[in-house]
Length: 135
Image (cartoon, rainbow, N blue to C red; front, side, top):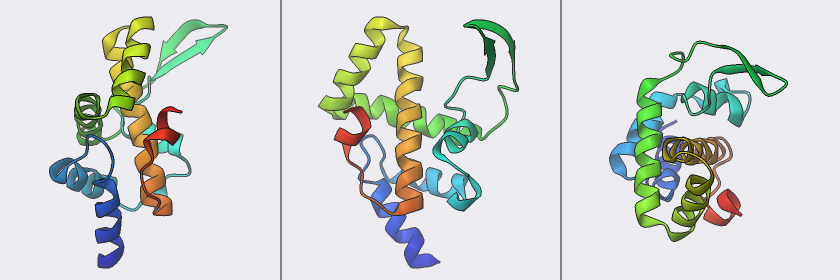
């Protein structure tokens, strides 16, 4: 178990915006990645998606917005802020998104993308590729 944890931790450090502290927070707060059926479930656990019920593009109610892990929510938003600062590709994607919506929504959308990327890194043991993330 220990070598697997170390390998995945090193791969997480390759993600733009994730350093030693955020990487360790993500590793410890996530736990075994196999308990999440898919990347959407993991992003929801990380509070990176909206908890809203819609029908015909109209809001019909809200779910429990406080369910999930608040530390992972913090970690991915911090990683998104740092990724915007240090990665030109992610900065360009964020600026395009922020031009169409509010800045907070664009930031949470980037945090969602990072959470889903980290899900695949932890589950499959693949390296981070920014081109797959933003196209």
